[in-house]
Amino acid sequence: MTGSVWPAHTTVVVPFKSSLMSGPTEIAASLPPKIARLTYSPSRASAQVLADAAEAITALDSRAGRVLSQFLARSESIASAKIEDIEVSTEDYARGLGGIAASESAVAIVNSACALQLMVDSASDGVITLESLLAGHRTLMASDRVHGRYAGEFRTMQSWIGGSYSPRNAVYVPPPAAVAPSYMDDLLDFVNRDDIPVLAQAAIAHAQFVSIHPFTDGNGRVGRALINAIIRRRGLTTRTVLPISATMAARPQAYFDLLSRCRESHVDEFVMNVARSAQVVCNAAAVSVTQMNELPQYWATLSQPRAGSTAARILAMLLSDPVLTVHSAARLSGLSLGNARNALNRLEADTVIEEITSRKHGRVWVSPDVLEEQDSFTRRVAETAISDF
Image (cartoon, rainbow, N blue to C red; front, side):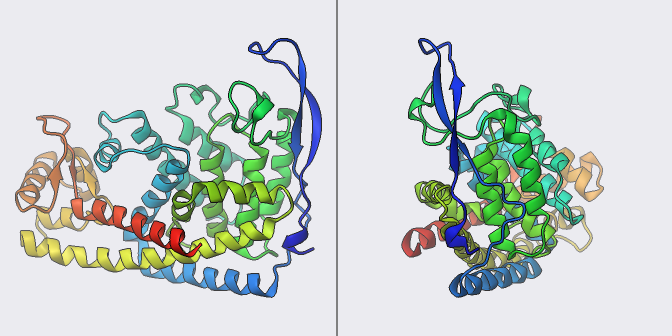
C-alpha cells in the first residue's frame, strides 16, 4: 500500500478511575495498526526526496568525521529536549557537561545525549533490540526525581498526552498499558527490516513509538533517538548523528500536528517532512563543519603552542570536547593533573578558552567558539524551517 492509505488508528473503550475524579468512568484509548508486515511504497515525488536526503546524510557523515560527531550529537540532544520544553543557557549546559552543579534541565540534556549515543552505538551492530531501547530510557531518566523510579521499564498504568489530571480533555490517549509490550515487539520487527527506504522507516517507526507511548515519561526523546538508531543500523551514518530534532524544535506545533495526522492514516506527510528536515539539517551542519574545521588554525594563531606541547594536545581536543575540567583534560590527553591545569590556564590567558566557574576547585573551562557555533547551527536550521516549510 502507499503511504497515503496507511491504516488509521482505531479505539478501544477501557475503564478508567482516578482518585481526583468522582466515580469510575470510561475512556477511549487509541489502538495503532500493527506495522511489522505492512508495506510502504512512496510516491515518485516522495521516493526522490527520500533518496536525495539519504545522499545528503551519507555526504555529511563522510565530511564531519569522528571529531565533529560530538558537536552534531549535542545539537540533536539540545533540540530534542527543547521540544519537551527543556531549555537551559549555554553556560548551564556547559556546567552539566563539566559534571558540576547544574540545573535539573542541564542534567536532563546531558543524560539525553548519553542515551542517544548509547542507542545509536548499539544499532551499529545491525540490530535494534528491546534491551537497547530500555537501556536508553534508563540512561535518559536516571536523574529524574519523579519518573526515575520507572526508568527502563514499560508503564503499567494508562497514560495520556495533554489535558490535566485526567484524560477527559487529552490530545491523545495511548493504548492500554497491557498491550504496550506486544506493540513494541511488533515495532522491533518493523525497525529491523531492510526493504523500506531508510528515512521512511525511521519516520514511521518514530510515529509508531510515540503513539505506543511505552514509558511513563521520556517517550518523545527516546522516540527521536530511535530515528538516528535506524539511520545508523541501515548504514547511512557510520560515526555521526543527524540533528534532525532541530527542525522539529523550530516548529514544534507543526511536528505535533503531523504526528496526529499519522494517526489518521496520513503517514506519507510525516515521511516527507522527516526527509526534508534531514536535508535542511545536513545543509546547516555542512556550514558548521566548515566553520569548525577552521577553528584549530585560529586557536593556534592565538596561542602559538609548541608542537607536541601540553597546550597543543589540549587544543587538538577542543572540537570534540569543548567543555573541560582539569580531570577530564588529563584523562583525555594522558597528561598529569598538574600539566593539564597549567595548559588550561595558559589557553585561558591566550583567550582560546574561558572559565565559567570562578572558583578555586571544580573549575570548568569552555571553548566559546564551539558553543557559539552550536547556537549558530540552531539558528540556521530554524530560519530555514520557518521560512521554507
